[in-house]
Amino acid sequence: MYCARARGHAMIRRMEHDFGNLRAFVQVVENGSISTAAQRLGVAKSALSERLARLEGMLHAKLLHRSPRGITLTDAGRRFYERACDILSRLQQAVDEINGDDSGAINASLRITAPMTFGTQYVGPLLFAFMRKHPRLKLTLELDDHYTNLLSGGFDLGVRIGRLHDSSLMARALAPSRRVLCCSPDYAARHELPNTIAEVAAHDCICYGNASVTPYWEFETPDADEPEQIVVHGSVHLNNGESMRDAAIAGLGLAALPRFIAAPALRDGRLIEVLAGTPPSADTIYAIYPRTRYVSHAVRAIIDMLVETFSDGTPWEADLATKRRKQR
Image (cartoon, rainbow, N blue to C red):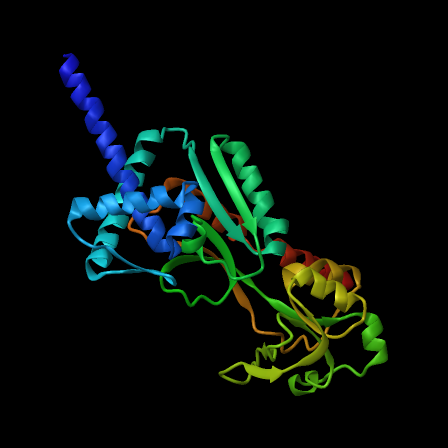
C-alpha cells in the first residue's frame, strides 16, 4: 500500500513538472523572449532556461532558436507549440469542470486590459460588481490607451475600441462606439463653424497621438460608399480622450471624440455638436481574447456579462437621447 501511494505521489509530481515545462515553453513563445517570460512568471531567467533545456532534452529536439534579438521557433518548435497550447487548453477545461459547481461560482486569476477612460468609466465598475458576486475571482486590471499585445502581456482578456487587424485573437463585439465632432460654445462664437467636411481642415483641430505623425480624420458620408478622409492640423496633440475633451471645452479647437467621453459635456452645454449630419466614422467596442481551442469558464462569464450589459444600448447614448427629448 505504501509503495503504491508513493508511486502515485511521484506520478503527480512528474505531471506537475511536465505541465510546468509546457507552460514555461508557451510563455516564452508568446512573450518573444526568455527574459520577459521569466518576469511574467516570477522566476529567474536561469531557471526558465533550464526548464526549456530539460524540455528539449526530453523531446530530443531543438524547439527554439536563441539570438540577442529574441527567440524564434524551429519547425519542430512550431508544431510542438500548437500541441502544447491544445494540451494546456484542455487541462484548463478539466480544471474548470472540477472546480465548477451548480452555483456557477468562479475560482480563477485573470489579467484584463482596457483603454484608460472606458476602463475607468465602465469596465472597472462592471468588473468590481462582478467580483462581489464571485469572491474567489482574483483580478489584475491594467488600463492603458496604447495598443496592448495580449499574448506578450500575459492577458486573458482585453477590451479594445477600434478596428481589429490581429488574426491571432478572437473577438466579440460589445457595442458600437459612435463619435462626435464638437467644440465649445466659446470657440463657435469666435469662429465660423464648418458647413462641410472639407472646411474642417481649415480649423484648429485637437489631435490624438504623436505630433510627428500627420493626423487625419474620417467622416461618414451618407451619399457615398466610402468614408471621406481629411488631413487635420492643430497646435494641441494629446494621447488621452479626456484631455482632448477638456481642451475642446477650453475653446482650443474642434475635437473628434467618442461619444462616451463627450456625452456629459454635450448634455450640459459645455460642448456643442458640429456637422451632425456627417459625423466622424464610428468604431466598435470589442472583447478580445487569445485564439485557443478552449476559453476558460471565467473569461466566458465576463464576456457574457459585458455583452448583456450593453445589449439594450449604451448608457451614454441614452443620456444624449434624453436631452434631445427634453429640448423638443
